[in-house]
View 1 (cartoon, one colour):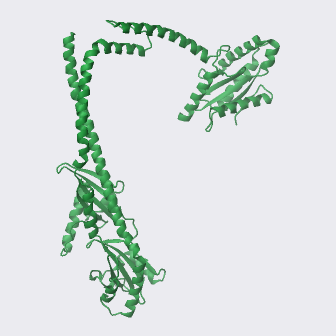
View 2 (cartoon, rainbow, N blue to C red):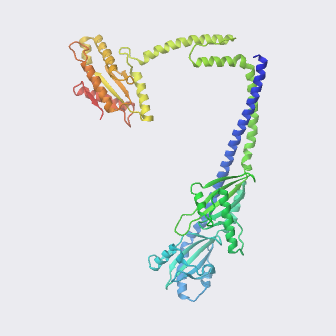
View 3 (cartoon, rainbow, N blue to C red):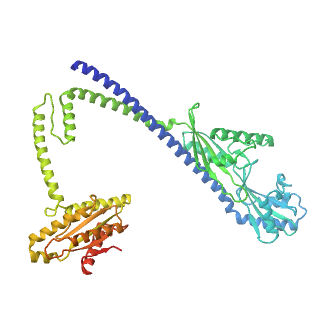
Amino acid sequence: MSLHRFHIFFVLTALTGILLLSFSINHLLQKNIDANVENGIKNASIEISEQMHNNLERIQQKFSLYEKATLRNAQELADYVAFYPDDENLTNFAGFINTSDVDGYYEAYIINEEKVVEKSTNPFFIGFDFKTFPYYVQVLEQLKAGKKGSHISAITIENSTMELRKYYFKRGAGNYWVAIGHVIPIESYAKKNLASLYKIYPALKKLDVFIVTPEYVQQVNKAFSQGINAGQMIGRDVQAASMIFEDLGLPNCSDYPGCQTIFSAFQNDSIIYLHEDAPNLQTVYALAYNAIRTGSEDFLLIAKMRFDPKPFLDQYRQLKSLLYFFIVFILTSTILSFMLIYRAVIKKIIDITRQMQKDEPIVVRGHLFNEFKYFIQRYNSVLLRWKEELHRLNEISMQDELTKCYNRRYFNRKMNQQIELYQRYGHTFSMMMFDIDDFKRINDIYGHSVGDYVLSAIASDVKTQIRTSDILCRIGGEEFAVILPEIGLESAAIVAEKVRAAIEQQNYIDREKVTVSVGVGSFTEGDDFNSFYRAVDSLLYDSKENGKNRVHLRA
């Protein structure tokens, strides 16, 4: 191929690469931006739901603040009814207790012997029958039997008025019970506290809050109409429940409103992230409050938040433009530079590098600069000498010259490798150390040449008694060690006894029996190199002190 044609081909390839790289970078950037936007929306959702949770917690804490005073009011109500039994509406008493400085207001109830509300400051509850609620029946009976002086109910929600209520029960002097209801409306909470969130989070475009119980769904921040009737209230509840079912993809129950499915949806995730492509908004459902079941009622406070992602994108737009410019500049500069030096330099360097990776002499065909020729000649010369020296050094550094088995340096390296395999994968291994008994006497009587022969012959005989995977090392003058991979203590003991017996049976010196003392141990949890080595070495010396020519095992 001619240089001209090569240039045309290369330019077309480079342009194609630039386009593909641009598309890839754009995809990666958009993916990263989408992830950051989603993360920002989720974080904002969590913060908003936490603020809603804290606000509702503060409302509920107000009940505890007035608990003692409300209990006193319950006792005063009992005294009042005993003194004014003919007060039908309890209006005087209600006027008295509601003049105090208290959050919300109080309601008074008289419950007759049939457990039915006979009198109340709230006409809506007159005739309410507690017998339909086993929990309250049990409470009233305990008060009647004197088992408790008073009872405080869990916090409940009144659907029609969106009020939090807490009831305080006491036994009256006659055959009746009295109750004080502490009522705190949460409509103001929805209007004041929720409205402030729009100022804090500019991306928040719409926030709807729902109270969900197993019986109903109620939108908290929807304006309350004083003249709304029961049918309109139920219709509004049905509409809110149906919207949540549709948004979360939940099966709508024929038995209205099927709110238990909404409870189930938030059991594992407190944040449910949705996409709404049509209005260019992204929707998040967040669990803001989950009441604990107390035997009276439990409920969820759920927020539906819709965010505009644009405020989260502003910080990435400039970065995206700058990155595009940088990529185009770098690619253009690289292509121009590569076209100038590729044919003369880079191609030759790549060829030389590939050959160097094989540790073989370099051979490059074609025209070469003088600097390349000199480099290749020097490299080939150094490579040849390096290989020869490396082979010689390996022989010297890892092998005992006399016995031709491995030396102490190789022993240390292989021991560390075996310990690492044990710690990482649980591969067991054992080691035996043996020492030639009375070797000094052999040297003194027969001379060092005979002693060297004994060392070499014993090393050769031991190799015939062990596996090819076992590692025989000379670690001292007449001291040897054998690393036994994948062998436990029992198998190692058999090998050690086999080696000891084989040496005892050999005739290395005329009229002189040569024996060895052996220590054997297996590496266990808690051992390290030094502790394991000392333990086996100690077993070797135990063998010597207890008569020699024997094997001692690690307990």
